[in-house]
Image (cartoon, rainbow, N blue to C red; front, side, top):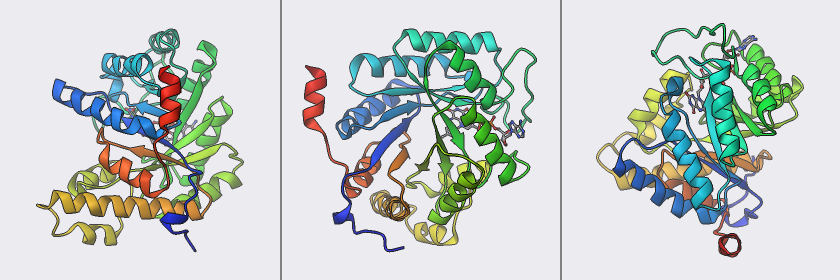
Length: 300
Ligand code: FAD
């Protein structure tokens, strides 16, 4: 691919980070220390996930509201419409608008009982496309939606999934953030197919640094993301070596980003799992540096 050397990456990359709302005080402390570490990198936005079936509604809202109050960051609140009425969802969205939140990651979500097939409520939004249309009526939100380079597990085919992605974008969303994947070609094939189907919005790759291989395997199995054989082999023997695993994780993720960069990608979304160090190291390799001046200006 002729991917550039790290030293030649020009700092023309936009990043965003994803966090999940903490459950305990200890997890809360980890999250806010990570946010403090990553804030100077001035991401375009930081997003906060929403637990299955709205189970973290309060915690997501509190985390997002604190980001608005206490940081210079632009928060994006994930919002799922499964297991809720349209009125309930619209109320959550109005609360976000009132709290100053202007970016929503709009998702259908998975049913709260794992493995149960999705069925739309009569008074609910039936898909993320309907949710996007509903959100547009509540406020002039910046809206991101999900995309699946290896197709959503429920999709009949990649082509129907891409048609659905186009419906979500046509309903008024602004960009797609992808499920994690591990081979650059997986992303490029998907991007080419989406463009051929008429998608013009930006498709931002979701990057998951793999520091815990067993946990990643579990997540990948659930969302039907392929784990390449080479990756499995790389982590063999590192089970009891957390520091070495971190170094390997940073290398693998940075290599993926470097090759995506060579294929024209300039936006990256990092699944941080609320830890700063890996994301920080990968961003540093990609030429992203702290923007102290900006922060001081905002604080003033
Ligand atoms: P949709 O876009 O509505 O699609 C779901 C499935 O239905 C797809 O297979 C689609 O092709 C199909 N479909 C829908 N309508 C049609 C139609 N008219 N015709 C044919 N097929 C159709 N989950 C959470 O619970 N909380 C989160 O915070 C969260 N954040 C996420 C962030 C990202 C970046 C990603 C990629 C996923 C996230 N998820 C989250 C997971 C997501 O909720 C699940 O993948 C869920 O099963 C689908 O949500 P969706 O918005 O993609 O659904």
